[in-house]
Length: 242
Image (cartoon, rainbow, N blue to C red; front, side, top):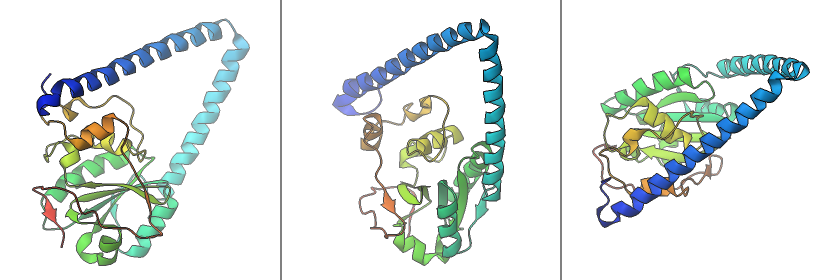
């Protein structure tokens, strides 16, 4: 498998294969455990009744949670008009993704299209946008140095910046599924499924990909304490913000 990493192709390939194999073994073990529980329940009417009651309670709780999310603005992709609205959103929503855009940057329309889909499918996360040209304070404090930038916020803290499309294969033709998976790697979205195959198909492997495989991704900054500008973001076809 050639994934474009020079002499280290075999090493990276082995790492990927190991991750996939471990995932398959875990899934098989989980299936066996689920089947054993199912067989046990089928012979215990009281257990079945308890399971029904538990599921009913979960449905009630899920519906309540969904209504709470809707009240906070989840399920709609909307624009925040000022700094006050941003801090309110970061405080009230446990998971928040902010698209810093500029009207004249055509790539921002791609992000808009993906966020319109994600906000409806992933109610657990709120998706919003902010015009960088009208939010100089936030641009400076949050280290927005490239447009588009997707800011990932969890529990009131910035956990990651997705600057441009380098993490999405270096192209604007990435899928909504891939974007969801990348966001989920920072626990700002719940992704149910495996790593999208397109992540490695024809896109090469760089230091960001290797870090993700090794579980070394992350870091956090408290939005109440200010931020340092990110100074080593590499070359890109996306617009630098200045």
